[in-house]
Image (cartoon, rainbow, N blue to C red; front, side, top):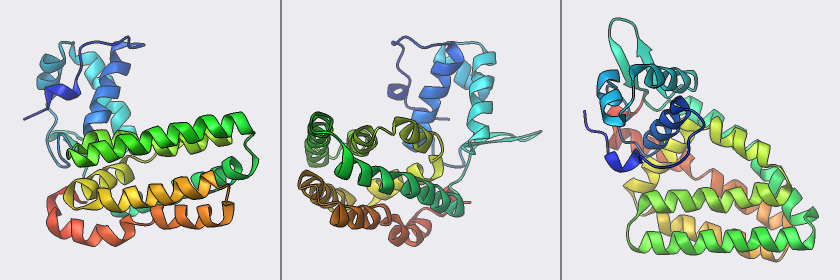
Length: 234
């Protein structure tokens, strides 16, 4: 079982050991490392992370509750395969929160908040451009989150952003697989550039339409990804 040690940093100030393990494992799963369907050996994880089995078990139970890990009695624990129906429902959930949040941000955010969040979007967009140039998908993915997070922040809806992040594991894995598998960065950069321009102009109608197109892109990718990575899907 190969787990990338770079995804398990030793530093930081976790609230509890189980919280740290959960966060590190969840980040790794979002980046498909280990890949969907891979076994998760609790003894190996405990040794790799330098902790007892108890916090690892607690973290795995939390991940199982999110549908990211399958715990099968007498068989073992495995990274869940991507469920296309669940990913589409998670995208629907995200769109249901992000589109109205964008409307609030563009239409109602007061000037100083608007400027601050627009600057955050600009910084995330530049980070994405640099990451795309060096083929750093992890950095690109993180900056993508930063771009969208600024929209929720500008709308004053950070609890909604946190809900999206906690309830979109299958959709996020599908997004990362799509990003890693084709020349998607150029397309996403174009989308984000268009969104940034429309938001800067406070053009709510066209920004909302552009956001819906942007979030729907994976609908075009899923079939091809299933063909390329059949073992990754339920």
